[in-house]
Image (cartoon, rainbow, N blue to C red; front, side, top):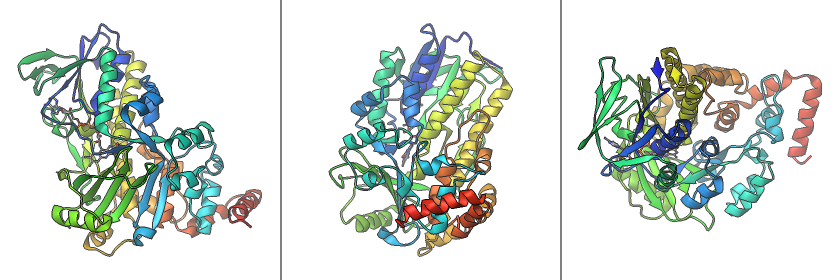
Length: 494
Ligand SMILES: Cc1cc2nc3c(=O)[nH]c(=O)nc-3n(C[C@H](O)[C@H](O)[C@H](O)COP(=O)(O)OP(=O)(O)OC[C@H]3O[C@@H](n4cnc5c(N)ncnc54)[C@H](O)[C@@H]3O)c2cc1C
């Protein structure tokens, strides 16, 4: 059992996005008598390559009483409506499909019957693109100005408040200013050691030049991972067998057009893929590649040939894809990059971090500050399930027809995670259902990706054959089939 009814100090290690969001959360949850201290090592920079959020970003800001307009103005964040996939089916630059967010109020998402979305199934069966059903798709595709998108969002037709592209450095600075104004204590110091009692609870942090007594610790130390990994040695679950890339080479690109694009662009490359995240003043780019299939110099040359100009990589980051099986041990919890990392194909890191904090807050509030060991075990199971869902959703992207290079042939020959292989079999007969996604959600956790997300990627990649969608439609009552046919006629202009 963990008793946080009367703590003196909550310590957060790390001043990146994860650390500052945690600081804001704890400052809100506890009375001013409880000290919330964030410690960051000035000589260890945060990660910031040009990031994109998921649909829970706005929720995370609102939960922390941050006005969205204030966030946009202070950080220069730009609207993000989803992802554009380029060349993943082996067709080069012309071969594109979109995975767009969107929610309630969109007719195609509103009609859910017998477990499926008949109007989306109708599009798949007829070989029509899914993305054109999203309101404002035309505006998204032509890179409409930010002000125009703001007005369109205010109509409510999009069904949810989109997400944002941003520079993590500017976001960390903004969150820091906000958190300090609310009373969070900031210390520039390096944490050198966790000092544990006989039960394995961290009681003191040894800093360079000081000792700090603590009641609870958030380890948001990024890839340094000084808590759950280096102190508690939690077991690591690797995704390396299923996701072949292991290196990321970020670079900056000039703006491609006057208005920032409204989607993250993910382009398949010879040995991986390239991201382009549009910011106000530049584009954050990078190549995620497999070091078994290319090296940094060749990867750079490939990017330059593709873009038609030189790029200057900031560095090459080697990583292990995976997560720690237990992120919460005794009174220490890993958050953000300290808890795991996977390639930024669907921009999952900050989204998962916010969902983890939402759950921590739920448990602390619900348990009145007293948390049972069983609840902590469930929490760890919940985040493991989320990670497994992320692994399988990313693996779906690689389940694509491209096979023209050694990397893509090795991807095709690599094993499928058992859970994904099961889903694949189901998708040959019907579209993704809630019962497919539920096993990725722990008790009280919200999924990171929903049925719609799976459908928007699986259908264009051919993982859901049109015949499977047709079979699903044929099982509907005849009155509904008539509605579906009328819809198709209208979409096809007949
Ligand atoms: C190539 C790449 C692309 C990415 N793209 C996306 C994306 O599109 N979307 C998304 O959601 N996420 C993305 N991410 C992840 C995202 O950058 C991070 O999740 C996010 O910035 C939060 O990082 P963090 O706070 O966990 O760690 P960091 O930003 O790395 O911060 C770590 C902090 O810990 C401190 N620290 C370390 N050791 C010590 C110590 N001993 N004592 C005191 N302080 C210490 C450092 O000083 C620093 O302040 C990407 C990551 C990479 C690498």
